[in-house]
Length: 88
Image (cartoon, rainbow, N blue to C red):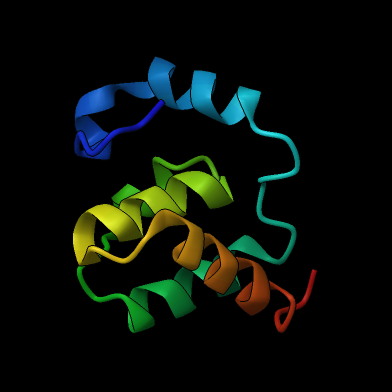
């Protein structure tokens, strides 16, 4: 489980383990469109950090939490609602 360690320091295997344990947490819309919107909305996020999340909503929410101090639940809800406005 991710408890505040910067995502890049966790390593690729940790990402895969977290992502594989998540039920329906993968992004369901067009990833490129969402990524571009996230980079505009959350300017502290980087392209590589978003790619390191393996398109997993919970990991992106954890990243937003780490960078902005917003609760993970609130960030995940934001992502889910925002996803619904983009093409699949």
